[in-house]
Amino acid sequence: MEMIRSDGEELTLSLTKAEFLTLMGSVNEALELVDDWEFQTRVGYERDFAIALRSTMSDLAHGL
Image (cartoon, rainbow, N blue to C red):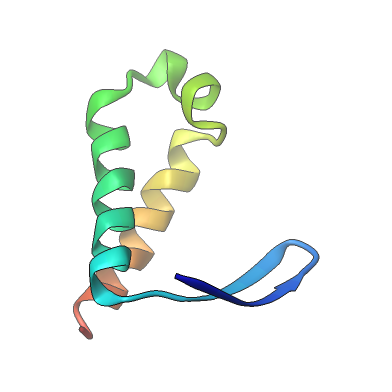
């Protein structure tokens, strides 16, 4: 993994396919295993944000 650019709230990363799929799997596991009531505390973001991220990552994975 390599950081290409960091600009305020946005990052551009270069990932291998394995790194991307590992991150995608980690988001999915967090959604599956962490209860709603503690999700934001344990993960740092709202569940809805993680659901949207998983959806976007899944769309990107279809192009791999």
